[in-house]
Length: 413
Image (tube, rainbow, N blue to C red):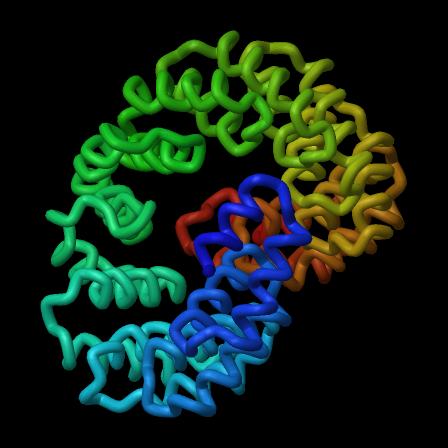
């Protein structure tokens, strides 16, 4: 009868198909009802599947196949606690015990109970020590937690399986090894896995591993292949540009980053990297423009602020430096380096009282920095703050007694 219902459904006669299924649910044998419930479930009619599954579970409380099916239906309804209760009824002597343990592990992990999930997986391993699906489950569990040291041996143990379901084991192992920094070994397994599976995630993982291993010439064509497959895969642009840069291809690096900015114009990092590339080519105005774009997106971005101020210092744009530091401070960036930069700019603008305040603000953070102390001490001396200048110069000699020119300054004081 179930075959008749399936044929009617496949022919588009849904009304007749449902009539036949309802008839099975009321009058069919228990075996037919179970088949109907599984068909309902496969078609996405969960309510109907649940009614039959619960009825059969009551009739056959020791039937593990029905219990597993009912647990699956409960999971689809997000009734995880009830699924766990049903699965825990399956005893150790049952042939589906390990399957129940694996499903329980998934459920407990979903609930954030990782220790319980691990216990279930290790119990499954103890029960069937050579079952590939168990090793795979343990590998996946440890990988999901970032514990790749533990994950690797389980993937290694099932490497000969090549695939578990749709998952390529060589690629899983490669990802784990790459995460551990075992670049060379990871590359070998990526290359093996790529023979069977090539997708954008895998290509990026392979290219990134080559990049991390500093095989820039080998990484670049992989990044570019990924770009052909998916130009919107924004992460590739920065790394591919660096590969160009490492090979002295500065214009290509710059051009690629310009493409990258177009794929994600709201990425501060893209604008900062583009500024770096422009500066390396000597395009200072374009570098400055790119940094201003970055700061428009995030006025308190420290890397962008620092690089922007450096460019301004190279051009003696002291007023712009003061303004940039003010804006960064208004947006929560209070790095002491900015105070030093501001003090130096205010000194050049002859805003001496402001400069003195900001030198003093920076002093706490740079009291062990010889360059800062000398600059600060000389400024104090110019401002007639001789006693304070003396203290700063003495501090320099405490840090480095070989600074003879400071010793001479102290003598003259």
